[in-house]
Image: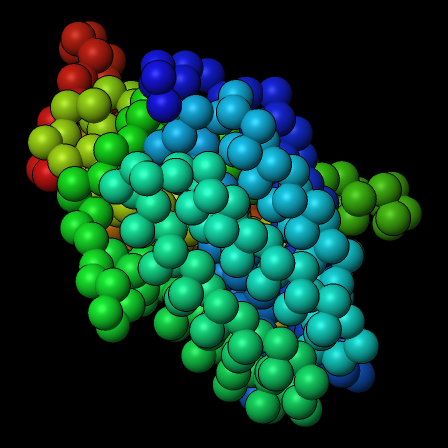
Length: 393
């Protein structure tokens, strides 16, 4: 790129809108798995259903992250880059449409959309880069995605068990290749620490995706409440869901979420903290997705005792978010506040007694724990100058 990009382009923000839809499909699929069986006695089927939904979420994240890194390394106003983003936008939309039946009737639709999106990106860049040294990296990426693409397409034609095995192997291959510099026999590999990126732009893209995931929780809560009779139990569940989303936002932005860009720029190897932040935001986004599923379950059944898998969504979502947020704090400041781990332990300890109480009580406990974390953050920052980033990279 001639000049590092500043704010995200309108096309990138347009691309993000597709993921608002795609994440709602993820939540809808998980909700269906948790409420499908009579009497809500789910057992092992709930675990396998959750694993398959996570598999689809990881595929969506791979598309978004690959596109975000591309626009943070190359000029996003070039025609080739805009073509990459548009293909990713269309592919993500098709994947979102296919998600509810991705392990049955729409498996091939999901797989083809994913493979076309992932393979076309490095191929277009390889052509556009010409003789640039980065072209070799794009060739290796294209080889890896072509190999994993065979697993995706073949898996889509098999029964569910075979499909899960091959799609899992494909994701392991892709995530592993990205972790180790896209190694290909005869073509070598590269060190991520030497990659040049527009750090502030990439940091902003992570922040924007977090807001997309947070917005998805609001959509799920709103749709769930509007579908139910406006009775006091449902209203309490809806109000607590909104309060939970506000607390999640507050904890994220205070203060690491505001200065991720500064931390990336201060790091000796910006690409390393960028890759680490990718993992961290994935954990937080999975936590937000689980929290959204919990909203829908509790708003529909606010005064009933809830089974273990439901409680895992209601409390496990915020707990997973806090785990990711703790690592995020370490990436920005090189430390972790005790309130994060204490809150996770409190949520885990509260799980057993909450199995005997109405579902709305579990949501209330989650709000109180998150509010305590937010209050601890505010008290630590009160009266002190804004803390500067100190990344340990």
